[in-house]
Image (cartoon, rainbow, N blue to C red; front, side, top):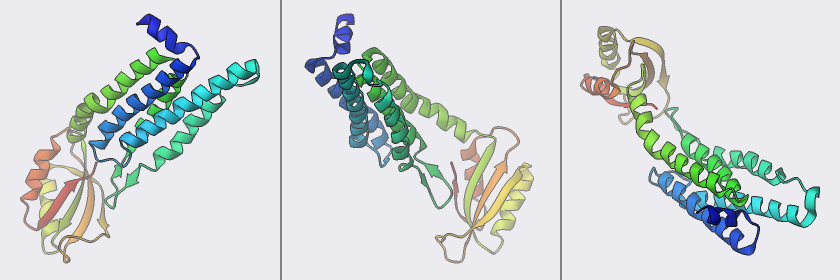
Length: 231
């Protein structure tokens, strides 16, 4: 294993082929995980970004070999790191209910680019360790993140209420539970029922509570036609 890694660190045609192939494979695997979440950036995007970063690093190394010490070995890598940030911005979406989506995908794209740089530089051991930790972060830590979100002290909800008593019933429920309204505003978007009023509300629950149980209780309130949590 050590011998293989040492060989891949050498600069020759075979090691270049293996580095670029590994970049496509590892980048594609991370992209496949994002694709399961129906993100706009999937297998192809991640594979190409990782390959592009690896190609930039290999090219930089090639120029260094050709020109000796006259070429800055980190110049192209620095441009990749800053450039991919602009690409990641394109995956971030703010929905009509002020939900921010795509942050994990944007962060994954940037990290996969650095993964490609490591592979392109021949730092295969570091790239493999980084790849494993990326998968742990996006797969294993996702469960911990979702649990934290669903048991947070702060609950932000979007509701569509009947103008005839819907808001009154909701306010009485909030008062009975001793929740504190941190912010509330009427949403201007269209509702499922034309006569309903759309309201976005942020509640302080006092302590960490199960958000699903609160949403279920709210769903039974007369005059509340639709509700969802904003994450």
